[in-house]
Length: 161
Ligand SMILES: [Zn+2]
Image (cartoon, rainbow, N blue to C red):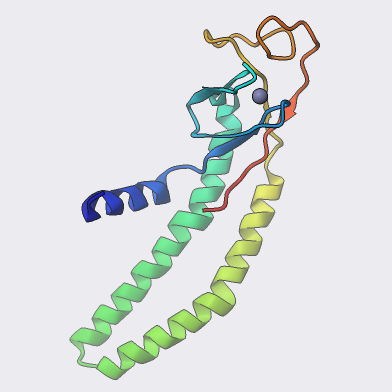
């Protein structure tokens, strides 16, 4: 993979939504991008478009704490560095960087992390049901040909980068 493609992949991952981890009743864990569907090895098919509203709520929280606020802080730091550079204050640049790194690691990241976790905890629990390839919810437990009653399957959210 070329450096340019790696950069595009990193930027794309930064702005893409977090993947959805589906805990299938058979025990398998499937990682699915939102909007995609997948079929487990047990035959159940999972369509992530069922949780459109819930995912959009998650995406708003995720972008606020993981994209917009860190980007804004970085842009402010860059603007201050440029201002110091054009005023000829090179020592001020190093002092600013030291302060920014210290404040970021001791204050900003822990506070943002706690607020992000609290915001995630406020989100509703997701429930996916197995579907047919045409998008209909399967009447049984989700496996082809099964008539067992369906059970709601909580979808654990895995947001680690
Ligand atoms: Zn399965």
